[in-house]
Amino acid sequence: MDWFSSFYTDRGSHYFHTPKAGEKVDKERPTQAGRALAQLGIAHIPSYSPEGRGRMERVFGTLQGRLPQELRLAGIGGIEAANAWLAASFIPAFNARFAIKPEEEGSAFLPFVGDLENILCVQEERIVGNDNCVRYEGRVLQIPEQAHRRHYVKAQVRVHAYPDGALAIFHGPRQLVRFPAEGTPEAEDAPASSASARARGPQGQALRAALARRP
Image (cartoon, rainbow, N blue to C red; front, side):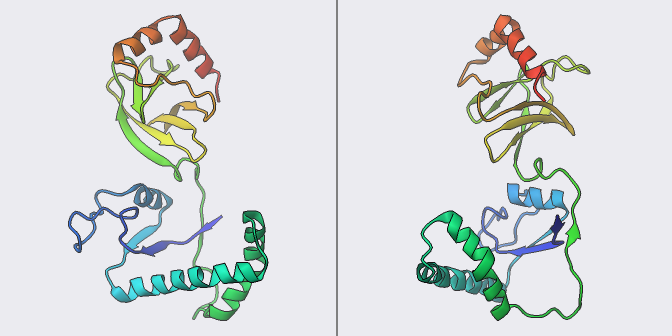
């Protein structure tokens, strides 16, 4: 898979944090999009030029104004048919009409080698509680005992939330546990004392054993 080396966008809040409206973005506080781009090695360039934003808005306007009519004329009524028609008909015709030949031959895209799943996800840092659990989005996630370390109490870890609903907990580059979207072990809004008791009791032991068998 090939990737571009820089990405020029507007300063929408999903792209950048802007402390004060109209001023420069804060590159020291990346959004999830900014963090992912940095991990991919892509330079993220904010647009401060009305002309730059105008070019993007014209593209959006062209597509939003043209596509509904083109889909109607082609008799497209479903998402799968629309996707197939876009790839086979609309995009080649659109590029043939509007694309501009580059000044130099060759591709500016670079091959990417890495773990896309753990970059193109939501990442949030958490501090492990005294019960060796992490709280995330109303869930209590138990970290099972590791072969190299018995607990992570007070350690800073990172929760990865994947598009399919699965979760994982990382300590540095090491994945400690993964919770699949279906049957995710969780205790909704449980107080720390109750979660700690469950972790020490038979249910906690069974949970740790089950999690340890997961890939």
